[in-house]
Image (tube, rainbow, N blue to C red; front, side, top):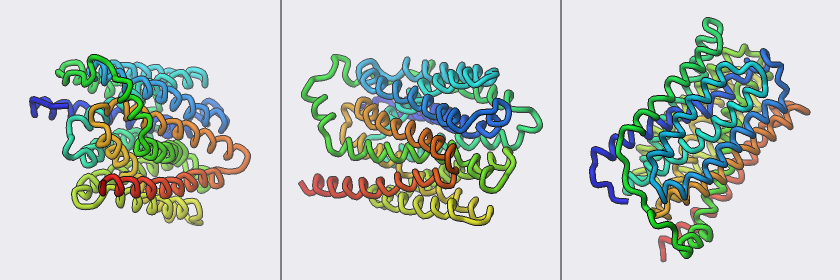
Length: 391
C-alpha cells in the first residue's frame, strides 16, 4: 500500500495507538475485576474461566472476519464501529448485577476488542513497510498503557469509589478512538476487486504463516493467562487484598509496556529471531521463579520480569507475517491473530479448570509448557527464514 500523505499516516498511527490503548483496557478488565467478582457475585473458578473463554471466543470470531473485510472494503468503518461497541459494552458491564450480564458484556468486549486489535495492527503494519517490527512493538506500548491503567485505578480507587465509576471511565475513554477513526480519511482498500484464488492458496499454504501463527497461539495463551490470573494467584498464595494484588498486575503490565519500548529501539540492531528466543527464555525463568518463590517480594519481582519477557514476542512475530504478505496483510493477520486467540481462549479456561481441583500454583505450569513450545517453534521459524534469505 502506498501512503501518499505522510501527515495522514501520522494521524492514522495516532488513532491506532488510541485504539490499542482501549484494547489494553479490554484485555485487562476481567482479570483486574475478578477478585471483586469472586466476592460480590460469589463466582466459582470454572465460571471465571468461562468469562475468559467466551470473551476470547468473541475476539476469535471478529478476528477471522476482519482481515478479508478490511482488505476488500478498507479499515475506516470497521475500526470506528469496533471502538463504539467497546464503549457500550463497558457501560453495560458497569451496571451488570449478576454473572449472566457480566458474561454478555465479556462476549461483546471480545467481539469489538478483537476487531480493534486486528485492525489497528494491520493498518500500522501497512503504514510502516520499512520498519514493521519496531512500529508494531511501539504500538504495543499503548496496549500496555491501557492494560496498566485499569488495575492501577482499581488498586487506588476501589475502596474510595467502588468498581462502577472505574468501568464507566473506561467506557468514556473508549470513545476517543471512535471519534478519531470517524473523522480521519483512510487509504483506499488494497483488494477492491476481491481475491484471486491463487493468492488465497499461497497465504493458506505458507509455512512461515503457520509457524508464526502457532507462536501467537501459545503466546496469546500466556498473555491472557498471566494477565487474567495473576491477581488471583497472589491472593491465593500470599493472602493479599484485592487492591494490592491489582497493583502487582499493574506492575506486570508496566514492565510489558517498558519492554516493548525497549525492543522497539533494539530491533534496529538485533535480529528479530534472536529477540523472540531471548524473550521466551527470560519469560520461562521468570515464571518458574514466581511460581516457586517462597516469599512475596521475590514473587513480585519475578512477576515484573514476566511482563518484560513477554513484551516483544507477539508484535515481533506479527512483523514477520506482515513482511511475508504485504499485499494481503489483513487476511494474513486475520488468520495468524485468530489462531493466537484460540490459544488465548484455551489457556486461561484450562487454568480455571485445573485450579478448581488443585491450585493456581499448579495450574500456572500451563504457561510454562506454552513457553517451551514457543522456543521450539521459534527455532524452526528462524531456520526457515534463514533458508528463505539464502535463496
